[in-house]
Amino acid sequence: MASRKLLLLPGDGIGPEAMAEVRKIIAYFNADLGLDFELDEGLVGGSAYDAHGKAISEEDMGKALAADAVLFGAVGGPKWDSVAYDVRPEAGLLRLRKDMALFANLRPAICYPALAASSSLKPEVVEGLDILIVRELTGGVYFGEPKEIIDLGNSQKRGIDTQIYDTFEIERIAGVAFELARARGNKVTSMEKRNVMKSGVLWNEVVTATHKARYSDVQLDHMLADAGGMQLVRWPKQFDVIVTDNLFGDMLSDVAAMLTGSLGMLPSASLGAPDAKTGARKALYEPVHGSAPDISGKGIANPIAMIASLAMCLRYSFNLIAEADRLEAAISGVLDDGLRTADIWSQGSTKIGTTEMGDAILGKFKALS
Ligand code: NAI
Ligand code: MG
Image (tube, rainbow, N blue to C red; front, top):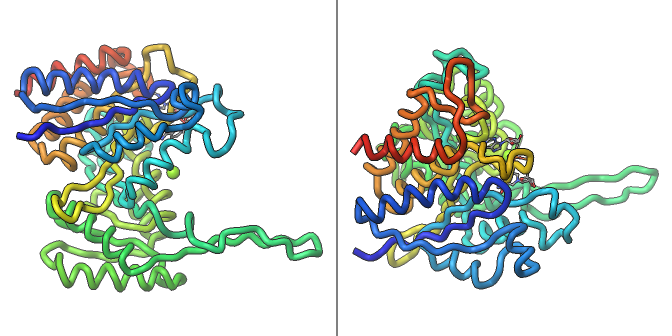
């Protein structure tokens, strides 16, 4: 079997600390499971800026484009707060998303049973929650032109952003959502605001047509995005896959994520279009959190978001479904055992550091074989 090419971009702050735990798990995959991951590594963010004066070098950008998948840690920190805008650490991530054409952002909201009691919602509302938000990432109001502030005189100004979606953009993000739904609960809820937005009318039409043409085996519902926000908080378990645009997805995915606990628990995936010949998609997997300068270097960061991002990578880039399921079960099992990093610690559980958490998850993974 051809080797699986994986590029690690640990980045800054707690990024490298969390990535070290992922590296241990991949080493086990290679040594004991014969999974044959070919690892390469690069610099991104502030660490790349320090080395090359750019947030990602051309060489590392080339490696990202050649890899089957990229695992990204986090970038940024106070050390680089004053560097020029176009070489700031975040520019590295934006460049990766743009050049890899990652138009689909996947944010799962999973509530591990052991953490249901610490949700801001009632435990029965979130326990066992497992939903996936699919957000369009490269179009919509964040990118549409015109985008400007116009001086109208009389001390009045006008701020303009433009929401634009073309048929092909809606079709391809809907396709991703339907395909993912087939491998899960077989249900998609599309959210827009067709009552007040023309782009919402088109979104609704194109999702409906895509469903009819290619995915009629999947259940499709439509919901206005504001009502969707309410329903997410009222009874989130009614959803399986939610597909929505860039702006609504930004907000709804943050709401959904917070139903389930700490930033330190949340993985994400960003996918590109399938290759015409092989069908393989470019993909980048990263925790939702940033570089957490307030805790970096202390050995207390929660590596679960990063490890859960590896699980998504196994599932979506390498079709290693059993291994992904087992890694997620290992995370859940370690939490059931009462082990917690400081960010998710509660009375009666055992507080451990980053390395111990990584070791415990790998130990549990082995025990589940
Ligand atoms: P942050 O996500 O780094 O931290 C927010 C809070 O959550 C902090 O108190 C932090 O200690 C805590 N936290 C985050 N991840 C954690 C983990 N794995 N375990 C335990 N606690 C965790 O967001 P913040 O503070 O707004 O930004 C810090 C830096 O990270 C900034 O330079 C920002 O630009 C950058 N950033 C980078 C992102 C990325 O690389 N994708 C995303 C968000 C922020
Ligand atoms: Mg956001």
